Structure formats: C-alpha cells, structure tokens
Amino acid sequence: MVIDYNKPDTERAILVGLAGRSTEKGRAHESLDELGRLAATAGARVIDKRVQVRPKVNPAFYIGKGLVDELRGRLDNGGANCVVFDDPLTPAQQRNLERELNAKVIDRSILILDIFARQARTAAARLQVELAQLEYTLPRLTGAWVHFSKQYGGIGAKGPGETQLEIDRRQVRDRIARLKRKLEKLDTQRATQRKKRQRLFKVALVGYTNAGKSTLFNRLTKANVSTANKLFTTLDSTTRVMSAGYPCQIVFSDTVGFIKKLPHQLVESFKSTLEEVHTADLLLHVADCSDENIVEHIQQTRSVLSEIDAGGIPYIMVYNKIDANPSFVAPLDNGSTAVMISAAEKIGLEALRAEIIARAGIDTKAEFNA
Image (cartoon, rainbow, N blue to C red; front, side):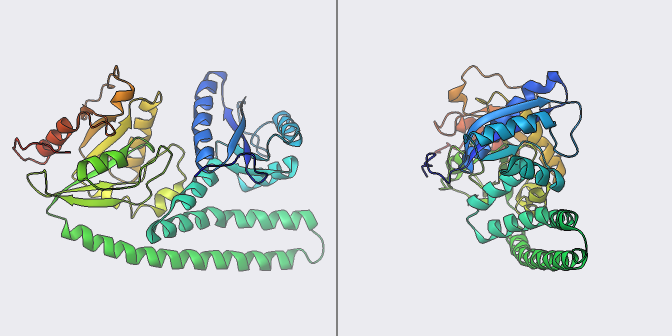
C-alpha cells in the first residue's frame, strides 16, 4: 500500500521519548527510531523526534511543562497533528496532554495495538487483538469518567457519570468474556491438533519482528507465508509438517515477532498462539545481523521467551541477512550453536538443516533441496 502523505487526513507525528540521565539519551534516540518504524507501519509520517533528559517522570504530563509548550507551538504551526510517546502514558497524562496540545496523543502500546489490528487477517488473530485492545481500554474508562465528574462537578454530575461508567464497563467486560470463551474454543482445537503432532519433532521460529522468520520458514518448508519488509507481518502461528527433504517428519511453526516494550495485554492474549513456542522441542532464534541493535533485540526476545515459560527450550541462534553484513561476527553465546544464513539469498541453509537434523537425533547425509 502506498501512503499519500499529502492527504489532509494523513497523520503527521512528533515522537517523544524520555531519558533519565544524559548518558541514556543515545539509547532513547535508538528507541525513537524504532518507534518511527512502527509509526510508518501504521501509516503515519514522522515530522520530528524529541528526547527530554529528566530525572523523573512528570506525573501530570510525563514530560516537563517546557517541552509541552514547545510541542504546542510545533503543532500550532501546522507541521504535525499527532504526538506519539515511546513509553506508556497513564490515562490522566494522556488526557492532560491532549487538553494542552489540542491534538491526538498516543503511546507506544496503543500504536502497537493499532498495528496488530490492521495486520490481523485470521479470525483467531482478530479475536486476540480485540481482546488486548479492550483489556487496555477498560482501566482507562474510569479515568475518563473521573475527568468528566471533576470537570463538570456539582449537582447531577455524580449519579449520571457513575451510571454511564458502569454501563460502559459492563459492556466492555461482557465483550471480554465473550472473546475469551471464543478463544478457549480455538485453544481446544489447537490443543487437539498439537496432540496429533506429539510424536513429531517440533521446531518453532522465534525472534525480533522483521528479522526474516517468515522468509526462512518459507525456505525450510516450501510454504508461501506472507513476507514484507515491515514490522509484524506475521501475527498467526503457521505450522507445516515436513517429510520431503527430511529423513523424518518435522513440524515447523512460524510465530509472531517480538519487540521491546510489547504491551502486556498482547502477550497475554497471544499466549494461545505462542503455545507453539512453549511446546517446541527446538527453537530457531532468528536475528537480523544487519541490525545495529542486534544484541539488544536478542536479549529482548530471550526476555519474552522467559515470560511465556519457554526460556529453557534448546535453541539454535540463526543469524539472518548475512549477505547484508558479510563481516558479521556472532556474539559469544555459550548456550547455543550459531549458524549464519541469508534466507532471501539461500545462503547457509544446508548447514542449518544439518544442525536441525542433528538436534532431532537423526544421522543422515540426505541432500538439502531448499
């Protein structure tokens, strides 16, 4: 899809981050660069990026009042119409900022949830994303109606405000309950499918978003999973049982990519999808060796794996896109074998397949026809 940034309804965003100390400013800018890629994936154009060094968060605005005034001036000049914060905002902070700036204000969590909603294609993915969005919204309903009560106050405000709040909260909770019941049915179906594959050797591809997992999955299985050079192309786990080209049946599963500051609601709602990772015999941890932040991204992936109780599963470090960085040297990792590949250019796939077969306990010299 080509985005027309000249259209009046195109969102033009200012990105804002906070650094606790001046020494952290560089990392904050790196995080804003990733936030910019997220914004572009969502269809926005980044106009400016600002990092404020501040020892502690302003409870009212997250950032200092001086930067709030600067942002208002930038917005008033017509260059931007939206402000995106790199860290979660409280409902009160978001409300205060929108009032002061007279513009849309969102944070990284909302942005990621929006991208997931745009990218969701299957029924399961749509259910999981909606559940995450509602669970993110529910606690913010209270803040919205408290704001209403304080703003208008006086006689008559308390009763109607609380009544409407309870109606809204009940409707959201009812919808959450319905979504969870639907997901439970899908979980039962998936559990039945996994049970049928119990005796097979299960391999799951994991890694930071846009590391090239789906391209590698297609190479290993001759599948046709959608790929693109953007974040979160894959939201559903795709599974292929392979025997052709392998000496036994091996199950490969492609999974949703990870990212730092991933909203907790998404991890929770996608746990059923990530169950393919949890039950795997072997993980292929795919990392983009052309990415200057590769070490941080590897650590973030390991952190999410620990969160879903998959941190102890044996894994192979697969350094992808070696064609873009031929001089790359793998970081020292005593817990895993490292394999250098380029899934796009079909480099190193024979060595990777041999390592997978060795991990599966199969002794063979069968040729690889990826």
